[in-house]
Length: 296
Length: 206
Image (tube, each protein chain N blue to C red):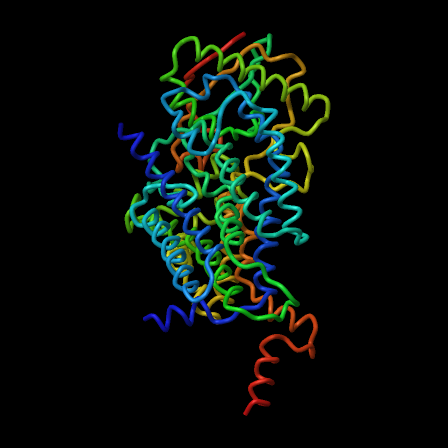
């Protein structure tokens, strides 16, 4: 058990993969922040939106009404930290700053209503992931440099990301029961969202029982199997393709967009991408093989 | 008391995450791998606790979304906010009029927390929301971007619920806001997309 644990978490990974994860998390967070410029202004809303009966909720995230100027300053600092992370300036310190400020700001959009689905807003994995980056050793040297220190944070962040799918499956089981995964329920979702937003495929899907069953079964398999993509490389590629189809299908059928779609890049093998882009250039894998042969 | 205990426990779990992470950052051989393993184990366990119990503990959330189960004969509510001009004409409000709070989150607030407020607090909230709706109307009339597109325009990351934008707004100022619950039955909507039965919940004026 210990050997399997150490093999999974501490087999050397490349500096390239560690840097890629840092950059992906920072780009995702920055894109959302630039798309939500009004967030700091929430603390200037009337006190009626911050009743004292819920003050512990606000305090847990450091949210205090009436300090909009301070919040604007912190929001600007968060932008700066994320840009610094993308270009690699003081990455550990900037990751710590960004992670803590994301913990503070991410709840703003929904805090007045008790955060019903803040987890879906796109900043959850960056908040936790950038703090993990801050705790880990900074990758040094070129992209092919290998260390166990570059492996465990990447794998942990990937696993946290796949939890968003696995737990969505568990939530459906918990609140909807096995009957959630039925054609009747898929038809109902399509029609309800047709009432709201008229998605282009909603009626076509709702009127086709076979497609509804396919969607129900596909959702079950896709969400429940998500963590396997972290542990099993061959499965990961198929799961990523399924993820793209899953999210595009949901947009067309329900007009629900997954704000964390960019984070699917966390599961891409960036060493393989590097080999494909620059064929013939030795990667860390080939260097290790060559060294092993010379030693033998 | 329960709320204090729950909030304290949630905050403590985040503090423990930070403490164990700082311990990793400061650790050196020969115990470093063990220290990292303890941290990894905590992150996994705190997430699995939320996932299996479905007790949300953001940033270690339960990821509960779209969990409802029903059938096409159910009578369901859809909430909507309308601005009303001096002539009494109703205009649907854009879902991003109250950014950073999206329309559906405001519906949550209006149906769960607003009713518990004092009359004075309710009045303050109503006046504020009317002013915000009016500001969004003026900006839209002037051709300015509102909501999430305000800073980077079409490059912005949309909200997860892709409701259509409202571009047709009143030329006259809003003097009221109306909050409706619009009942519908999915199988009837399938045949007739206008088959809603509106029920006025609240109406606010200046």
